[in-house]
Image (cartoon, rainbow, N blue to C red; front, side, top):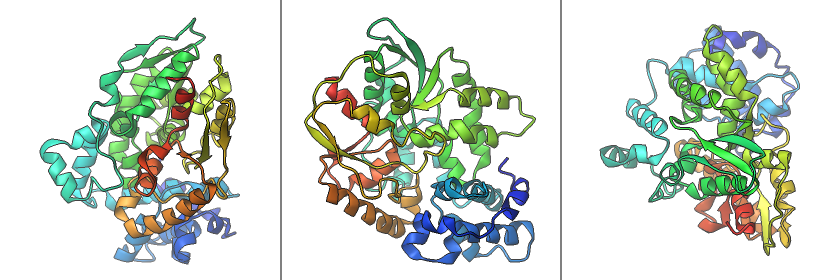
Length: 399
């Protein structure tokens, strides 16, 4: 998969109905028809499959100015997945002539070492000069999650389930408070947490870059580690990580690859942590927490239909906590992984609409499961006001 030729028949299914027009964050900001999913698909087919148009600078710009938010894929009545088509096109365009060789080496180091610690030292100086440590990203935590928790965290009482916890790059080095909340809340609710050794990045940054080779490299390390765990479920606090393992991992591997069977088995067990807790239920009632919150739903959520409401349902169990809904809770904030670094002005404009929506709620706290969204919003909202839903539940438990 992610071989563009394999998407030829799918591209032909696009009927130009225009539903993608209502969901594309880039189009809704710039109103350029070339930035609609249907136009991108037509352009990719004309340039890379049919050869009717040249592979120009403008073509690459249209290709790159996509957040890969998956909103168009989620709403397409014909089942076309423009995000995968665009990722496949990027892989073909930049294969062997990468956008920035130094950046790609930094990305490989970042992903293999799960976070900003991979960019420290001499590499960190280069990263800073290249804009890889922008203001949106907080300083790395003094002690990453992997140094705080190892192996397994036992259930508080008699274990009723056992899960493996996939810890993403951002949680590991930027937001270890989220990781701490995950293991503490799960254990508090009689769930044993295994933290497998050998985890690396989920591969989402390299998919966005169009580097299928690096995606596969990450999968060849992660899949055997996670699939080999004797657990009831595999949980992650990040919706993008969950999407990679649930729907993208199998597609990133060749059909004849023996690892595909493991990836398919793994996908069946993957849950976002609040969704999992809402599914199995709490064994301990949380205490009161006089706090209001609003919920920004991450774009990368199509892999699980229940994650939209899981935090709302879970946190409704907390006495004195009030949910104040956004007018548009599922509108993109403009982060898009590293999109906000590459297209700062556009991302800032998209974010401004989300910030205005947040402001009108008057909520104390902004919740989201996406660390990229959290980073992008935090520069305009007090740092401690933007967090993961599981952190609020941990606070209610006094953990």
